[in-house]
View (cartoon, rainbow, N blue to C red):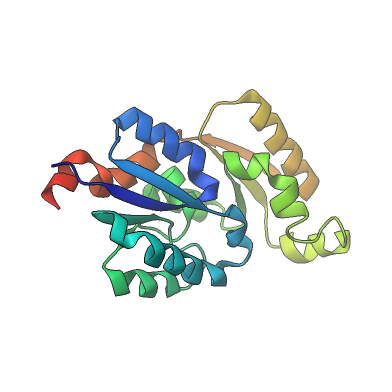
Length: 203
């Protein structure tokens, strides 16, 4: 019998998860996404994930969490360990979007990199400008970004519109622009060990 799996996910990766689900024909999986804005207050992520787990865990054969550590300093893992639940490996979404090897190479190439994804490009005004208060206090720009040298757009799609927006955002921040297309491949590979039908049947 095919297992039913709930994936508790960050809303910032919702589009990618739907594409990957369709690509792999993972009809046994249901996604429930939490607000992407939690990334501006990562200390809240463990408690919100815990509440979602406790409200849903009895309804599924397996629960998986589609977050990396995401700035929780290991606190998310402490919550997940209570229930024996796995998450995507890595420190943050940039790592699983690019793949660990490629992300480490980019970080070593230029430690002062500010990363964008398709989601962040679309919601730059809400999550970066307004989220950091730059619309109200533009003088904070050099405080937040003085140690950054470039913007690296880790793209999931090859949208020319998003590329143009990302370049404008790099100009707004006064940083160099770097574009890297990775598609959904690295994230799909990170999810397959936990979510594929074969693995589900073994569990």
